[in-house]
Length: 419
Image (tube, rainbow, N blue to C red; front, side, top):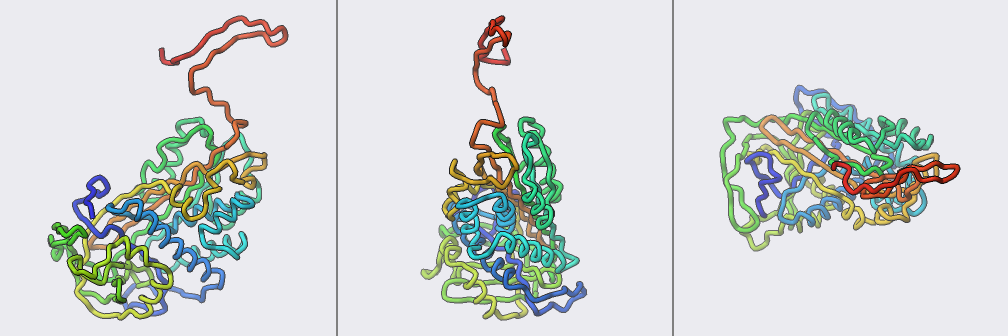
């Protein structure tokens, strides 16, 4: 794997990608933390979770292939939430394409919204010592009227902040970015760099996670050790060490290491090749990721053994930012980005629109105390007709005239407004 110093924000290096899996287990760790209140998941919730996990693996696989020799960190949960909000404003084939990309065929719009609400409510109450915050927002062009049903769905199911803004005002970018920064505890900054005046809506999801290990690492035990890269070389990296009870599992291709946070409901789940990098049976991490899905993960977890072990884990901090348009086009959402997109349920007015870009940014810090992670996803929607906006942003000729007689009083041309 190629070391990419522009993406790493500390001297630590970890695997090309790391999987954080929030898994709900019935067995509890015996510690002084609060006991979680667990309940049976509904059929819709189970369907949502399975589909969301498959979406997660497919998203990770495609992004990983796009950054084949670079580190990657994403929040499929954030992308999923942003798309779930967006599908409520879509119609026809466009809505179907979003549901297909999410793997939620067979579920109605209302079932998807309700399952999202129930599941997020459940996740937010699992561990009082784990900070897990979810925030949603909708920013729409102030010269348009938000569809009342769409607005109510965002409020009722996604607890979204809904604000009318002027996308022609350059300050709007800063306002949205400030909101994201606040909701991610200052970890996601400058999510959006600029917004075209043709933009009519930005849907944003932000996620923040901060948890301590069930068994913390002693800083005095952190030492530089060799980390073996896929190209046959090795590097020195800070490696944390402790003795703790973890879950391990292995099949012919991959090994799973499952490390608990807090009361054990949230986990840091590592998946890597079952063989060392110098073994002829070693499979590349991209191949390992390509073979992951919900069934493989569930089988590994079901066959896992809980035992006391020496755990060595790299200490690292990492930031990542990407645009997901091509990824989601590959996953079946192509029509949503074209002039054939149908988002007529966004506004009361008839407004032709399509998704312009989907921006995703993330942050993770894994240290002796625990893990802090954050992510934000912005779905930027633009009008595909020139009706609502007239943007004079290029050289032009101009007249000053009297309308009734059509007498031209002045005329001119403007090549450079700064001269």
